[in-house]
Image (tube, rainbow, N blue to C red; front, side):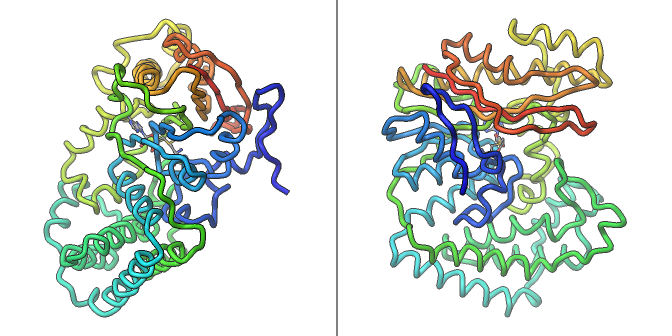
Length: 417
Ligand SMILES: C[S@@+](CC[C@H](N)C(=O)[O-])C[C@H]1O[C@@H](n2cnc3c(N)ncnc32)[C@H](O)[C@@H]1O
């Protein structure tokens, strides 16, 4: 039996480790459309609601990812407003929201739409013309680097032509998500923490056919539409792309927050999804990557720009100084300083958005650079307290390890306004 979150004297003391990772939700409706290693499971969200909230109506999720929080909340009858900087993920969450809110008759129609799409792919994908715009933008973004074998690349360009010809908005959305979420598996890349080229040994395994992957993904979406328990009337509202732009002087309308901000561990949320962003038309040239770099919460080496690290918060000073003295890359202290500077802006935004007494629940992990431990949870707690929040619980959710084997952790911080 799954061990639930344990609560003692109003404080969370333990959690089922599987639930705090993306794999904990495998097999749940909507969960497998795009495997997101950085996510947690819907069970985790539900357990936090039971443990820390009293009859909430509307929550805020500033770092929405693939939408685990809003989808889990909707199933509990709770609305959610979210921000997410990656437009591919926004499009994914938006399609999940549409499906979640469909009435039974709408779901039957949507399943038929998907059936027609599958037929279209089967009949027309080998004869359709290649999409020249997509081909040009590939060169604009990636130059001469080859991420696909020639045949897969041609198929992708043909799928884009089919997508552009679709007149029905819903068909287009299904097609865009089914293709974009299949690209990585059909490429010469693999996700291992960050996305990287496959090794020669890994390339000995056959690369799946993109048309089969897309058809399988459409079938998965179709079967999720057939599940009982839908639809749900709760609101899932996109508030804007950037969690750093939540209004600080807003009229508080949220009953709390459940979120997982970027970990300060170098994962580059945008670069790891460059194929998906390119296919969907969000990356047309190298400049587009820079725009995202300015918008994200700095958490990876490639996010560091000239402006990063100019402000060092008091709460982060010791760790930034320690790392400056002992680091293999000058950008690391800038990245650490920039991270906490950005997270303070987000904390101020959250303060403006949540009602007094609301719980703010944050899943976070620490990191280590060149032997210097960065206790992200402690510094983040101090930053949130500097904004006015009170730290109520700190629970170790599971142990993690750095690339070199140093012990790290994943924690849940619960603050209260
Ligand atoms: C740890 S992931 C969240 C995963 C999410 N809990 C889930 O289960 O899918 C952090 C997310 O924050 C997003 N992000 C980074 N900077 C952001 C910003 N300035 N505003 C909004 N979202 C941002 C990233 O794109 C990433 O999807």
